[in-house]
Amino acid sequence: MVIASIDIQGGKVVQLKQGSELVLQRDNPPELAEEFDRYGEVAVIDLDAAMGKGNNAELIKPLLRKAECRVGGGIRTPEQARELISMGARKIIIGSLAFRASKEKTENNGEKAGGEFGLNRPFLEALVKTIGRERIIIAVDAKKTTAADTENSSARHGARGYEITVDGWKTPTGLPLIETAAEAAPYASELLFTCIDREGTMSGIDLAPVKQLCDTVGKDTRITAAGGVSTLEEVEALAALGCDVQLGMALYTGKINLADAFITSLNWEKSGGLIPLIAQAGDGQVMMIGFTDTEALAETFKRGNVCFHSRTRNKLWMKGENSGNTLKLLRLRADCDRDALLAIVKPSGPVCHTGAWSCFDINRRYTWEYLQSIIADRFRNPVPGSYTATLDDELVREKITEEAEELCTAKTHEEKVWEAADLLYFTTALMTRENITIAEVLDELDRRHKR
Image (cartoon, rainbow, N blue to C red; front, side, top):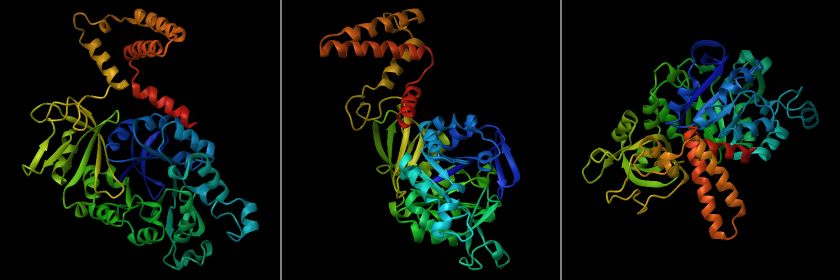
């Protein structure tokens, strides 16, 4: 998976060289989040919170419903992590606090002589209990140690080892990267390794520690690498290790195109050059399956509509090219082995060549989203005899009150089903008039469920 980074400082999207030198800034995080989400999860990092200089919470919140985000920066309690999950974050990135052991724990257990640093097991255990291991990413950001550093770093490293560094990459911990990562892995579904020395330099990532991480913990814990990546060859090399890549500076400067990086990260060799692609509507209904190659995938991103490789005709074709029943691409995701793709799409009409809505179902499934689409169309294009088109603000509110009372007083099961359908219909009509989408309501219910 290719992950685009949105680092926020002072209300702006920024890119810093080695965590300190400002190289560029942008002021359009919502647009960036929506764009990046087509290709993979988005890493949203609050640099101000990470450095204890305030936070950008109000700017970040809207992004969590616009894109599939993993969020980090200044998260210091399990409750704070749970709140972010409830607002829509898919995963939480924990950095400094994961390695700042309590004084009592350090003195009693001797994890780090002199004591400030060591794996913060009590905090990580509480975090796992609160949000689950599958939602936790631990950032093992590290700098290379040298002989000149020995006064501030553990002799366990050796001259060419890497040392975990915290507090916005300012404070060395004396904790060796590989050994500490192995201790941290049971508490996370993923480790994020940033090569601090090369972050923002576009000088190329050091693959040696990435290989060591993959060999040590990669079987049970995913690894995402960042820092210095500047070529598609590096993206390919990381993918060959089974490693995800997080892009920042190279993406913002145009050194790497996100679509190209996505295509490069896939396992084309295993799939023989053709990868199965499942098209799924936003409401979850599977529409069809086809095959894509590098050409078709590049055209999918370029056109914004899903393209396939026709095996019978041995050529590229865009779904709906002749019928107009296209599949608008919302987001694309690779499976765990990177040899199959899931496209979340917005169909413009029936997909199957038989005229059926889906290749896997004769009829279109009646969903709440489908109901709203019908109501919206009636409001936009009223036809003679349409009852829906007559529902102005006053009438629709009267009907909601009436149907709610009738549902509450219904006696039989059939009556209750009938009245519930009426109430849902009129409520959806009011929502549509007020420009409230089904997704917004479901997101709010999801947020309440996760609190």
